[in-house]
Amino acid sequence: MFSCDPYVKISVGKKSISDQENYLPCTLEPVFGKMFELSCTLPLEKDLRVALYDYDLLSKDEKIGETVIDLENRFLSRYGARCGLPQTYCVSGPNQWRDQLRPSQLLHLFSLQHNYKAPTYKSDRIIFRDREYVLSEQEDGKAPNPHLGPLEERLALLALREQGLVPEHVETRRLSSPLQPGIPQRPKSGEHLGNPGKGIKNSSSCTTQLGKRNPSRDEEHPLSHSRPLRREFPNPRRVPGFPWALSVLCRWLVGHEENKQKTDVHYRSMGGEGNFNWRFVFPFDYLPAEQMCHVAKKEHFWSLDKTENKIPPQLILQIWDNDKFSFDDYLGSIQMDLNRMPKPAKTAEKCSLELVDDTLSSNHFVSLFEQKTVKGWWPCGAEQDHKRILAGKLEMTLEIVAEQEHEERPAGMGRDEPNMNPRLEEPKRPETSFLWFTSPYKTLKYILWRRYKWMLILLILLFILLLFLGVFVYAFPNYAAMKLVKPFN
Image 1 (cartoon, rainbow, N blue to C red):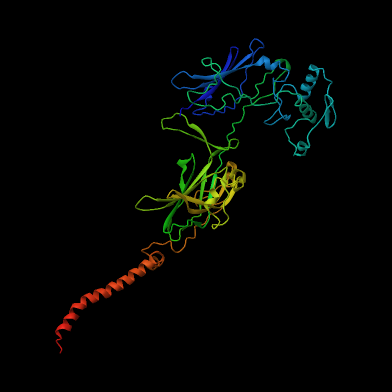
Image 2 (image 1 turned 60 degrees about the vertical axis):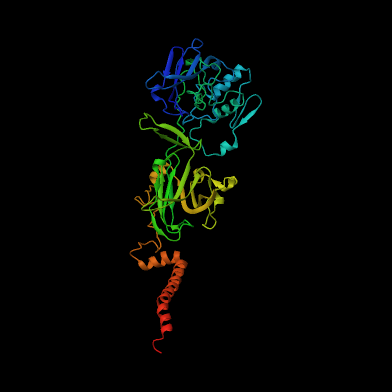
């Protein structure tokens, strides 16, 4: 699949701004989050051109497409399209009022333009066009917002929003090319850039006659901070059906295969139970609005920039049988979407493959990002004779923590320091976990006798039978000759 390195270039009249230095490498869904300013004279310079280019290192940058915005049409529009109306009037904070006129001034200007009676302000309401406007109880019942402006301005904004004016919005526009008129442009053949025009957030036009405009700012990128995913495995963890297994747990997040981790080895697990007390920590970037993980890495070692991808937050857990002189044997696995993961069973007896049935209702699934911590038993499956069988059961605790919380409550890998939050002790493994040459009696009791008991009994009986048969064959010729000769008669 081809990649694209898009950047934005805007121009009005003879003035232009190119953001080539801040191109977004190797992405098909760019989010620029930039604010650009240009001054122009209306109506001489009324066309605002927003173009998208594909950055190339060795050749001329390729123009993907452009869109043209008529600033004069917006400035003179009777629908207030010059600067969209936000939902709240804030004098500070991230949603600070951007228009040069306050809501009360805009409402007064609106009444003059339409020959309406001037609004009447009261202590808790406003009357405009024979209608009363009162702030909703839901807004008044909330905790006071320190960024909100005076009550009079908020009431005026409430009345303005009911007059059919343009609200503050994110505008989506098609990109076109003169080489292919009427066809929405996409970067290169067969590539899709989502909605390339998305991100033109209510392009505002301000006149110098109204004085200094309110400050604008760059939009914050929606990418959240890294969120470590912690997983602890208590003692014990059952893996039924695989006795004698030297159990190993291996896991990773999809897209983070290079950060694959595994536990230590529980040697000679006679009953198929592995005891670990182990912790895994996986940092990753998450997009809450899209419920996707953001992964940026180079596709090849010669790549100049990292390729950005968005993938579902999927966790993979596998159980392996460790072998010293051959390849490890794969026993079973489970793959879970952290946004829709099956609810765990409270006990090992209730854990079955029915928990991971995708046809179940949504009540049987839970989001780890909403619940933050999930603890219980999950089943691991395997393919046998083209059928899905239960290969094991895992008891574990999954926890999502924010980056700041992870710094306040640190936790090491495995049982390394800092071994806290919570502290993991050495696993209490049973007496069957021993070296065979150091305990011959335990070897005979737990290994040979438990697994080959009936075979040993059969071998002992067969040995006794063969012993009697051998003695009979050895003694029969001599006994028969003595009967025939009768030397003592």
